[in-house]
Image (cartoon, rainbow over all chains, first blue to last red; front, top):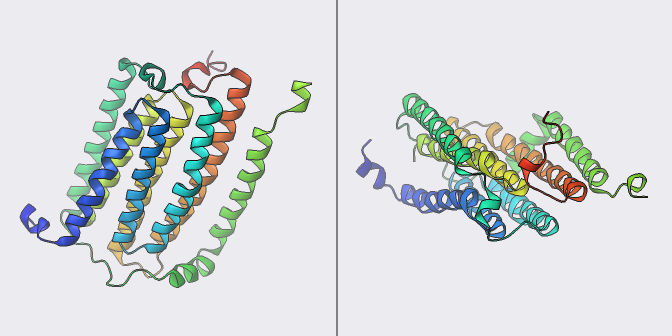
Length: 178
Length: 101
């Protein structure tokens, strides 16, 4: 499939319109010198992934991403930043110096090249047939509560443990302070 | 659409998240970079779910599990950062070297 073939499908234009801001915002998350802005760019990245899920017909997963990440996790991050009073607007304070950035950038590029070449080699230009109608939430629920019910219960236990652990860890320890 | 374009995008997001995890000094931003990597994995799962036309929707269900685990991880991570900040008055990862030697 050539590039013009690929561009002749409207859904690929939608993909580009979603994917380019997602990637640009992800780059800004790891490079911007303002902590609060980095977290707000993370909102753009995660909303972009949610839009891609909806493009792929996975509506329930997409809206869950919006609900959990943009609704809850981002608030948690912003609160963490406010409480730890991270310095704002100081580039040297937020990232490691260049001697750390160069090997990290090299490692990331090599990782991307390896995964990218492996994927292109394995799948080439296989077309992805998205069903005409989106995945019904009822069918996701049916699978979750029948086939994957034990993993589901384990995840609920993990969430309970995280809830209790978060309270215990963040609580001020009376014995030490007194 | 092809499955390749989604997996390439996922790989690019994962590489960006890896770079951020390795280079950020602020602990909250390290967690934010890890969230980017988890989002990249979710894109892969949902794309392959659509690719294999799986009637058990394993990819989407596992993406939901990853979202739940990521939320738990973010909550615990922020709690640990708050505790570290209270004890050491710093949230920079390279100043936490008490267990280094």
